[in-house]
Image (cartoon, rainbow, N blue to C red; front, top):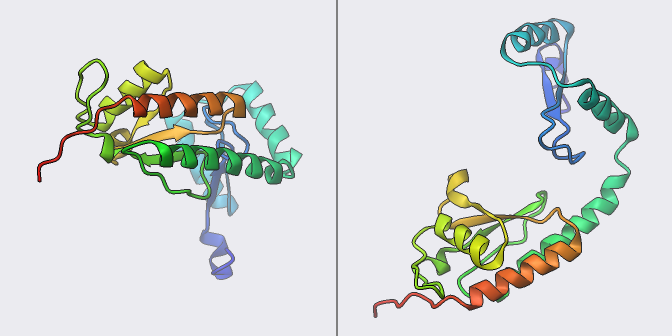
Length: 186
């Protein structure tokens, strides 16, 4: 709309409350546009989805009417959490992580841990193996990158209370230090 206002009568804006309002899993979205286009989406939606509960609708309305003033403080908190994860990963052998803006998770390159041996003698062959190792050895759940189409990565969510995140990072660092790196041919 800002780029081409003349397209107003043909523009549909779609959004949801999952990310901004931390309402993931509520599956509530909304759309704005010309009346004819909204009517068309209502017809389509009525044939393909069910309605959200009354409680979810009321919570969404409260979120949308409540404003976004909380975001500035929340963004600072998330940045602090992100920096903790990135700094921890930098100390872990075989892991690399860039500090990205605009997310509540870090995508960690674990390719340096592929081929490593766990204390129990298992070889980490994939990012799923590495994610399972962290779950078993560190009791930290991460998502393997292959689930998102990015092999040799794991996704670490950091939108959690800082004490829990510090503890998880400490346990990840300990688990990574316990790995025996793969021997590379020269």
